[in-house]
Image (cartoon, rainbow, N blue to C red; front, top):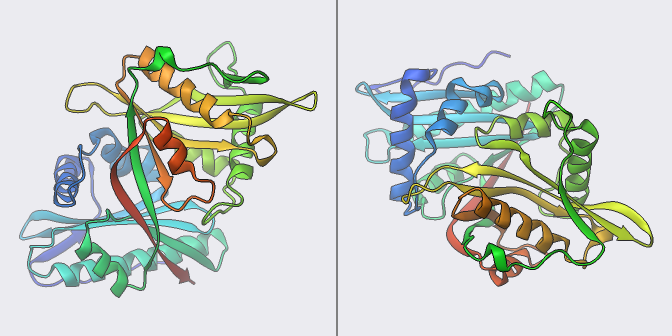
Length: 334
């Protein structure tokens, strides 16, 4: 299925981005964060990966220029079967911004339909993630048929108390995934992590099945990915050792102090192992690891309406909210 390039107003042009566009895309993304009053900046390595690196392999994207200045960017991410991420940024003060945003979102929907057809499916969920303060973007999403479905808290905590954190409860052991002599992780452990995370989130908001290859590919696209940031929690249940939980973290870029951080991409506890302190044991592990590596913080994202009350757990453990994002969804059919 061929997707036509969108027609834009006079003074605008559109094309596929290249490596030379990375600095301008970083600047555009940082403008977006600043306008939304979001702390910190965009990671240049992540932007580069999306445009010309491994993350580009699962993305289709366009940049829009106004009078020769890069002023818009739309990305369609083939995240998994039935799930397509859409990210849009357009300078709102540039003439024709509303029309351009609508055209780019229309192209994103058409591109998603092409991806769905290539997968042999008939439908996918479009998923956009505006910052809470991005009222103009949310107006564009509403006009394109999206609706708000959830709010997410982006939280962080310092790691200077790592030495005082308690060990896991008796019967709980947290370890890194096993590796071969050459440092490559053992497949069986990676599959354990994937399986326990899939089962842990089965009863959560917007849960869907992500295949093992999709899971691995998506995580490895991140420049901050490290195999030694994958942990497994094993627990004794009625005399049998089971995989009770898992945590996958990445490296966060340096902050204003010049210190990197760790970020919890995933943490899950199997329903059969809940109530045994596994989540705290995994979180304490990543906090201690970040401290030992000279980092100054651990970040994570949590559903503001989590049925498990995870946000309360994180607050009780020292996390505070830095900013909020939202999920906006639309159904896309071939």
